[in-house]
Structure formats: C-alpha cells, structure tokens
Amino acid sequence: MFDHRGCANGNKNKTCLVELVAGILGWVWILAAVAALYFLVVAIFSNSPWSRFFWAFGIGAVAKWLASGFPSKTNGKWPLA
Image (cartoon, rainbow, N blue to C red; front, side, top):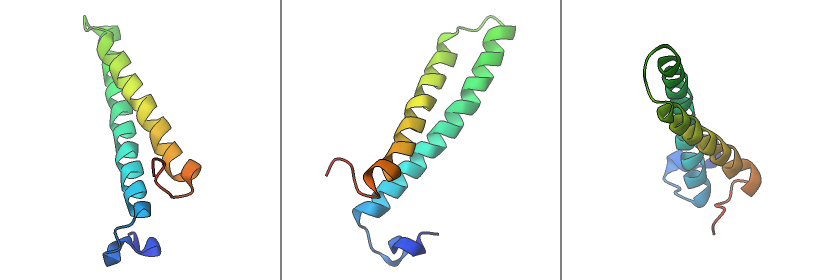
C-alpha cells in the first residue's frame, strides 16, 4: 500500500508518519460525519440534545481541515519539524 514511498520496506521517515496521521484524521472525519448525521436525525425527531450534533460536526470539521492540510500544505513533510 505504501510501497511508492518506501514505508512498507521498514523506512520510518516523517513522510510515512504524515501519511499515517492524515489517514487517521480522514477516518475520524468520515466517522464524525456519519455520527453528525445520526445525531441530527435523532435531535430533530426525538428529544435528544443538539450538543451531540454540534460536537460531532465540530470534530469532523477540524479533522477534515487537519487531514487535508497535512500532506498538501507541507509537501509531505511534518509541519512541526
């Protein structure tokens, strides 16, 4: 899967770490989006608090922002190094 960058061959450089973090954040975004849709429906049709929807939406928005910013803005380099 990561053969094109050498991550599968034991090369644990910062590029592999950035891809891993971006991938995890991408999955967090997807799961938060599904949870936000569920909490929206539950909040509209039952007596559930709206705060759950806003938390899921906020977490999804931040995860999407971070996931899209890691590889593209840093050209595959760790942004804090």
